Length: 188
Image (cartoon, rainbow, N blue to C red; front, side, top):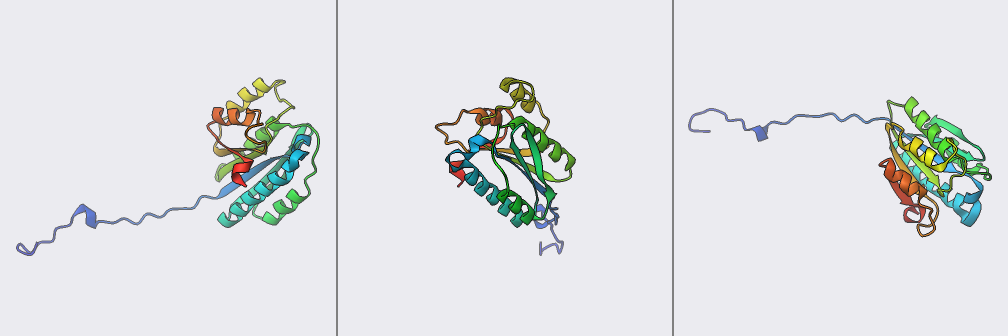
């Protein structure tokens, strides 16, 4: 305002600098290594997908953990680490065979994620969706158990079975848990 000699400050003239902190990330890969995954080269394709998640985590400087499930249990093969080559080497050496203890793997992933509450946790479950070892004794009981879990993590399911042949277990579980679901053929 030149006439009065006063300065008029409008709200649009004000700016505020906002610092945006970067939360530490952790990607937990839960990989099905059961006998049914050996069919149709599914294990190789699942490992390829796991390597892609590993590459993404490397680029984002996130830590990675690897859980493999086969036989009657799930095992944390690599604890959360920034050493992506350790996970890469473990993926190469994963043995396959036995049953599919999917619930045990997911519970182990949830437990590992709970220990890492300061990190932004993403759990990626890669399986053909054919569980046959049940924590509660039945598929329905396990689904209820998993759906009741309080998660502080993003959950992603990837079905390695072709969508036309899928039993629908992982799709239903993803819907119950408000998680993302993909088919392997859509991601590779």
